[in-house]
Image (cartoon, rainbow, N blue to C red; front, side, top):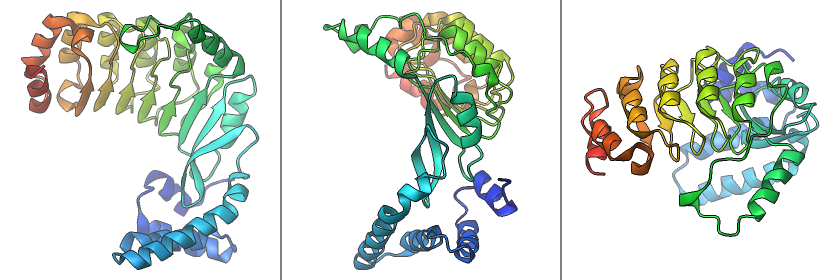
Length: 303
């Protein structure tokens, strides 16, 4: 279904309360109960009296309980709503399988779906569960490198141009999956890219960065992968990064230097790393780097 101009506006600016109020009127004409839900939630944002807030919240809860199942039924089979706004799915999750690309394409036709979580399929998850069950002395601080990745064939068939957040955390796609993702038909609007615990090395990171498909990324979560200093240097192609999580990657002093030289260094608002990730020499580099914002330099001076 093609989005109306008002729906397109709300996809781009989901915090526009005036637009939501106008959309409530549209839904009222269609006898859609979400019209009432929008009205109640907008009133809740303006109400200051405790008694009135409690009454509004109670009515919201009852309305949601009555209708949410039917609202979620608008999603395709195999697609789960994991975040909602005024009853509409805004983030969906899909378990990876040969049917996943088609399900994702259909799900992204949803009126306000702009965030996607791709989870490992059953076979991949069972392999991970079996591995970790054999590690009784598992220690987060001494966690070994990820297993050889579960290849995610079919990533190149994805068209992600309509989403703002892509979450593949804990799906061990490795470098083969990263290369497939880099070849996706479109991903140019993704602002948040979550690749925690994906088993991606420097080659996969370089492929993603060089593809040009993720040039709008502001928030990159790359915790516990297999990145080296060379891989950090490749991340320079993500020119707009404002928040970067590289914890539990052994990037060393070379990686710290690559961060300092990256075009986004001066725009960083958050940089998540541990001392052991960059070494003592790397800490000194970050603490004295004029390219970094003052707050970040101060943090590293206190390490």
